[in-house]
Length: 450
Image (cartoon, rainbow, N blue to C red; front, side, top):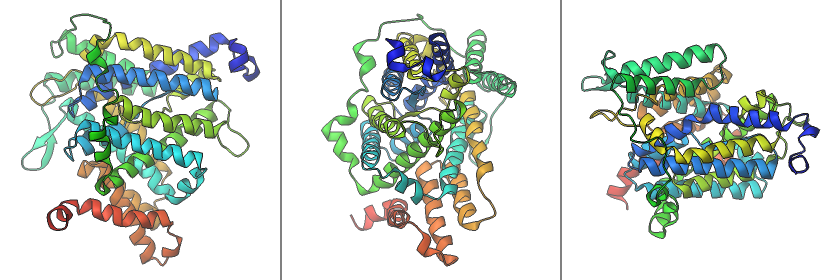
């Protein structure tokens, strides 16, 4: 039965290899089960409910990907996308979390319609290459900044805005220890380095009393553990997301999700020798349909946008070539919903500042991994380098992913006009100019116009 559905031998694999690849993929991306609840709970969502929904959403959509595409890909809540929801929409704009998740649902539905309409290539051509790359770099710096703050390494400073924390305190010490483990293991090519680093930080936190131990190891989820599911579809919240002020943010979610998926799919397919003669992953339309549905599904589940993970490349490196590996990864995620007490230990908040020292090193390390995209930007062309700089600097320095991308798009159009290349600007980019101008002047418009 497995052979008929997954054509395992035809792709030069075995059931044992697929199972091993699926487990390895899970181990390399399992950190999201700890990190996503910590990020979203800092914005007011219930930790346990987000933990259960994160694992459940990853299981559902990874299984769907495996069954519908027969590709060894895995999906989970996207880092960077959850940061937009937590820090931009909920904390920055003071929106109820249900409205923020409704924005994610809308973004996923828009992506789904575009894929069905065959407009994927048009969207890819509309956004300049340097802006696509710089979005990943800017979000990487943003996530790293959140990690430094969650570790207590970076603190608020009245004179300078931010400053260096007390590194000899407990939370920074265990975070730095976990980060050191991740750096060493990554440098040595050890898979699952992030998860092992989280384990070290958590162990040291328990040993030295920085973290409180769990009351139990496992438990059956209660009804309250599913409280985030469906909140975005409540009419009183869902229709609040249909405002002009949120259009740029929904666009930011869409662009980040869409291009992250393409990049991850190409990278994983390339590692497995699965690319076609045009350099595209196999069954690309089905892949994008599942991913788009997963984005909307993540909003419905209350865990932010669910997207394809490049970490699936670890399973591919072990020989995984079919959707059976995805099914194994999905089963592993499904099993974690019973271990919320342990997840809560890792993601617990410490002290008045609300630090998360056990997961902070993971955020810093992920920031490093995303920052490596900066090498692919052509810094010799002002029409590419100026908007890239504005995005990369703007995202962390304004603590707003939407604002940083807005700076980059406005800067791109300005440079193209100044250099006599206005006719080469895609109509979509022109359409975004008034939207981002309204985004930046929303307070003035609210006070003086609306």
